Length: 488
Image 1 (cartoon, rainbow, N blue to C red):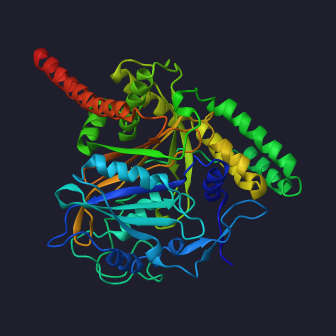
Image 2 (cartoon, rainbow, N blue to C red; image 1 turned 180 degrees about the horizontal axis):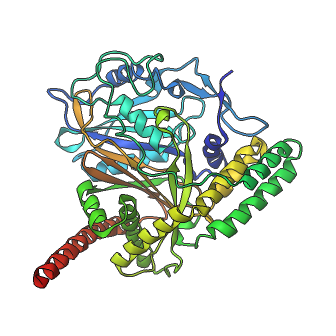
């Protein structure tokens, strides 16, 4: 028998089944410089390259035993007897002149298409026609297979740390994260998660009640469903409160807009160093500033309590590199979008993050919801899954996953940029995925195509906020230096 999906992994299947507007794949566009004396790799080259390296990633050659959830047990992962890598690898060419605009328009269409559940749940495309001879690898994998951190680890496996590709196969016998051959990938810890697990251990009473609930659920599913809903309502009321309603939380369609903003990582580190806080606080303030301007441009009243952001928190142990599936909890952060002053917004974001870390109550509440939902049988779990991603809980998702701070290669060509994708749940019109790589930070912004035609307003405001924060940080240093000089 194969391995069953976990309840958390199955959640992402159920969200798709409940609403056709929800697409639960994650992905990225990886942009490369031209290969020395060669064009982009062919489909056949990419297929051979992947086949030689998928030995320690069984999910990529497995399919679901059932394409849908429900019943009394979760689907299993089973080897696909008809697996053909040619079904997962293809080629595309974008029109001239091959700028960001053309690439992002193509990516918008690519990310708008769901994966076929009757096959292994991933796809990769060689994208040709980028300006200056560049090319890209576009990939998407279903969230039931991988989370943001493990997908970065998969990227580490598929890429090389030198221009000379590895030539030996990666077998199932190789230790996880240590491919057989001359190149074992990046430096130790290069792909460790930037986000910390801020969740406390579950309270004893929560564990005890969850155990009772799980034992009772199979025999009395209706009572279990009512009990789970009641537990969720209590946690939302006491720990999370309700998220405000905005135009970003109306029903959405099935098509997406995708765009990217770039910031030098050194600039974000300088802001953090001079103003205090963390890189994550800088990221949240930049996105919050963009969202503020977007809502203002629509004539909306800004919620005084702030926009509620769901930030996935990695709880993956260091020993779990290359372990697929999901090892995440959630942290809910308020973005003070009603505050008109940028520096004040930043300070409030820093203070809010510190309070969440110090208190830990909210994260414990979130973990309790996930724990309770995981004990429900599949036949009623879908309702709980929708509750976990309801607009009452949060307005938008912001992920922040660190990538390696060294140049990686594929087919001898240097990887220059990574444009990340976070999925959109139903009635969530906007999401932002952030990844750092090789001295840059890339903000991948995905939005509903029909309801967010004004995406440029958000992107322009985010870029302006990053520049203004850096100027403010440097002005503060200059003011302190002048004051010190005059005092002496």
